[in-house]
Amino acid sequence: MTSDRDARRVRWEERTRVPFLVLAFLYLIAWSIVVLVDDTHSALWGVAAVLLIGIWLTFIVDYVVRLALAKPRRTFVLASIPDAVAALLPVFRPVVQLRHVVRVPLLRDRGGAYQRVRIGVMTAAFAVVFVYSIALAVLVAERTSPDATITTFGEAIWWACVTVFTVGYGDYAPVTVLGRFWAVVLMIGGVAIIGVTSAIVVTYLGDRIRHHEGESADADGAAPGPDAAPSIEQLD
Image (cartoon, rainbow, N blue to C red):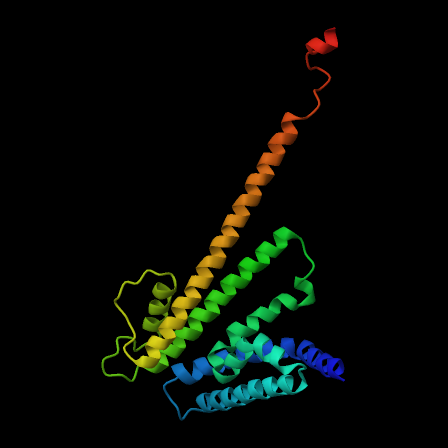
């Protein structure tokens, strides 16, 4: 009975992976409209707000269904902490959902070089979505504060970029408690992004060096051609 229930959860996750990936990015679009459109009485803003709430509730229902089907639940809860956080704080949902892209059949069972390219693309996509999402969150937290220096989306993106890449010019900085919380999240994510990127570069360079060393060894050990001079052993 336990294995059958968990098998149903796995089937649920397999069937909903792509639809929820689409919903995650629809949520990001709707949230961008709600944050960036000034006219809160416009039809566009209203549709985006309804879509935003509807998708958020869908995320919560999805997690509850998976939790109800999971056996043992303790193992599921520990393994699905990112999903729980994304259900409560949907700002993280597009970032969390990106990890499921690697399970698409087209992107599996490939060679090592392909896997490095895939990881590089995924890291770049993660960085873009992560920085964009945190910039929106900081803008929402900061722009109503009288002491805020981050009051436009351009300023929020600029601050997020210089923070995640550890430049830190100091021209813009969050002043609210919530804004500083998002800043800490961005700093932690920036360390992970830089670490993964560095690992990819080091691995690529190591593979290229081994490849060239192998070619040199093959060239040194190649048999002499027909016009090559005979060795002393051959003359004897």
